[in-house]
Amino acid sequence: MQGPKWRQAMQDEIVALEKNNTWTLEMLPPDKKPIGCNWVYKIKYNADGTIERYKARLVAKEFTQVERIDYHETFALVAKLVTVRCSLTVASIHN
Image (cartoon, rainbow, N blue to C red):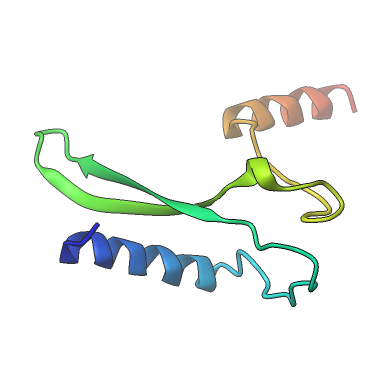
């Protein structure tokens, strides 16, 4: 993580998170502790085995979060696009 390639990967991740409005900055209540986070590093390879890029992701330590205190709702898209298309096709056939 000390190398310039990893530092650039971390900077790219921060820029992407800010660009996508991933979070909002809130005031921390005086009796609460902030939720920690970790960096996860991975090297992405091309099909021929050469390094494509260095990837860094910032992940929250979600196991420390408490529902309705640290977050109010969650959303995770898990359906594949093919599944959605098939479901819409069946629904349109049956009106």
